Amino acid sequence: MSTGYRELADILRAAINRGDYLPGATLPKQEELAAAHGVNINTVRKAVAVLEAEGLVTPVRRKGTVVRERPVMKRLGAERYAKSKWKFGLVAFAADREASGREWKAGDQTNTVRKTTADEEIAEALGIEPGSDVYERVRLVKDGGNPTHTLTSYYRPEHVDGTPLVDPTPGPAGRGGGFAVLTMQGFEPDAITETVSARMPTPDEAETLNLPAGEPVVVLKRRTVTKDGVPIEFARGVHAASRFAWTYNFPIPD
Image (cartoon, rainbow, N blue to C red; front, side, top):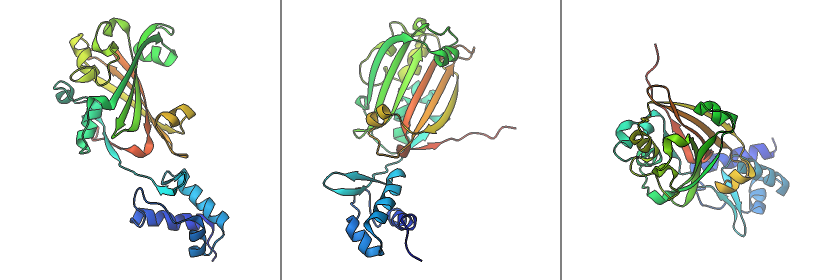
């Protein structure tokens, strides 16, 4: 049976997964692949395009087709929000880093803070009217200089006015981050609802996260409330799909 582009993609994918081509390595030139597998250049191009769409390889100008680095980091579930962590200064993204055996520094997170108005989703999550004022806190998080995700949180002004949460200084909002700040304001986080979905990135997201062609993003929506049910934060996160393994540990309900 002759080798089609899908079969060639299977062969090359298996070679990458086997370690024949390590992360950062360049695949043989397309002419060499064509000769080695008895196919034409067009078949090779289509096979490489399949691997590109899967996020396994990326074209690099003047270098060729390079196997992507895939340093997957653990993204903890409920454990990343443990009070024993943020009450003693460890913010959620840093908890992920420590669980993954990676170093982190405050400068790995940038901040942009502004006052804006709540859209319908934000308003419903925070229990306010659409168009009400909210603080928007946008963070871009990097690992070793590479963007991993963005996280945008929204707060009711009466909860955070005059606190480190509205300070645009890069890094977490003080020891323990935003949850510690909210606790000091009398709004201790007690319960979180997270909704996770996947889609292809917008052009702006692809540029911000430095995504190769074909890589999807994982979208997180998080709503945090106090023990009394007061909504104190709504957040939207956009994560590069290849950068995280999402881990959840929980007791099985009765």
